[in-house]
Length: 238
Ligand SMILES: [Zn+2]
View 1 (cartoon, protein in one colour):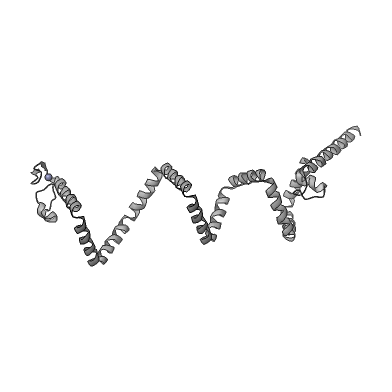
View 2 (tube, helix red, strand yellow):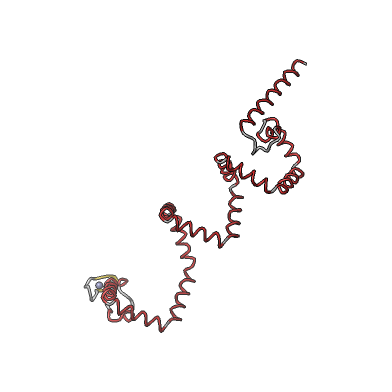
């Protein structure tokens, strides 16, 4: 079934017309496209008037409007969240790039915000870090290894300082560890002796590994190697 629009004069399917002329006032017999165009034009030409009417309506119907909003959000909560999730998944790269750009352009702001967040959420941050470390053990170990190699001086100094300031604690920790890990400790010790590790060679020098100069360790290591060779040779003869 078709109908002719009283405004544009086009012949259209009845679905292209509003069923209820009352709802749109004077536009009975006008097609949906024309009604929409009329409304848009009206809004554009009467912005102030429309805004004022809205303000008045809102002032008079605060409760009603709030209730409508509440209802809308409650009914569309899942939909909204789903839409956000979908957008983020489909635009991951774009999002990451935008975030990167923002961080580069707002370094100071970001740093300040992070500082503030960490101060206000100390416990939470600590827990997050702990969790991340537990889930990324390999990565953490690799990072630590790299850091120690690249900052040997600094790390050794820090260890020395800590040991000097916490002698009792360190000794107690050692005692406890050996008591609880006798087999492992013995194995570790055997390995250190066999490989002439820094800590073993330093112990022969009666010096903590962090204090012994590398050249001295190297000399002592060569000396021990030589003793071992002599001993082997003697055993061969005997
Ligand atoms: Zn029309």
